[in-house]
Length: 285
Image 1 (tube, rainbow, N blue to C red):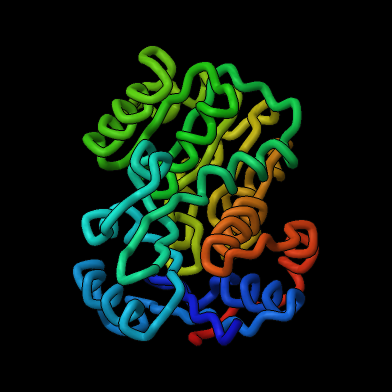
Image 2 (image 1 turned 180 degrees about the vertical axis):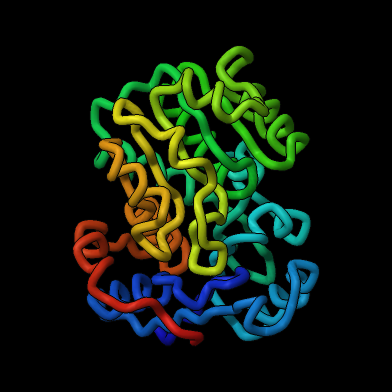
């Protein structure tokens, strides 16, 4: 097997650990793999340039690309096919190029679910509030309902987007288990868990996605952002006694599934988890 070329398309992704995760695991398996960043922000481009960037990645002979904010939903019309799960979620984070075709997959939902099962065992799943209804939020909503959450409330600054995601999840998991909400304080007061799936807290989007005063000790908190690993939300949640998990587990498990799609070889997820925090954030590749 010759050199395998892969990459990540997104905006503001200079601190992504994906290049290290993929290249380090490939090296451990004796593979020659190069993982490059296609950073729209660094290139001075907006999400409207995604078709051209995807064309260029395919032209360069990449085996596939991961796709992150703000492209996980915008990429779907540019694909030849999507898996059933990705279609049900309505978001794609992995595109495989093969025989001139582009196939979209979603490894985020499995990645979040696996990380939650391992790192938040026994967490109450009666009522959960999710912030964010974009590409990451679509995957986490799907994962949460698959994990057994009884009632999922979805809140997004774009109310129509939250309603659309709730309707999509209801079509898969049944009506009555998911709703779009607009009252943050009320929804959180009625919830046992909080999932944060917006870009707020990323290196390029610092800050808190909600007033810290709304957090309380009996609330569990799951973060999706992983660069930085310790977001302001996690710091505030832990300071208030919340049981909390960072976005690192989801990042590793989604990467492991994507790695297998790109290479056809199953990675060692335990090795990837152990190495995740060992490397400084990546620079443009």
